[in-house]
Length: 192
Image 1 (cartoon, rainbow, N blue to C red):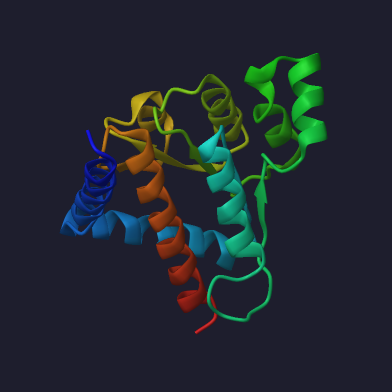
Image 2: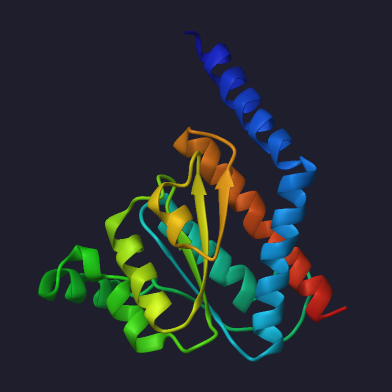
């Protein structure tokens, strides 16, 4: 395949995945997720976000939009990305195993009523799944962000957004759009 065709295919596939996000069912579900997060903030709770690789970057991105601002200058609101402290990640990975890097941090930071945002494109990343188990024990509300059929994460989450694609890149692109939509809705509802 020629370079031009590769570029066109990537763009077209991305557009198609996002067009699927426009379905009424998807829009209502996205709205429900945003409303649950807004409700948590109205009750003085926080978001704790985690994932591996590109999903780790998405966790950082989401937390930054919430703590700093998305489009409005407004007061900071609490969101923690468990991927931000490399010292904790490497210490936990070394001392307890990489499968514990998020669950151990949740033990430290999570409180009842907080929202866990678990991100894994496959829905089956073991360290994310173990963290969700801890989140449930701590009586957190779990929102999964995944793709395709949702994997194990879909079963374990209270709500799970499955991006309408099986391709990791397209799933991540849908997740970023979802993060921006939720950030916008939070600002509109909490800082009208």
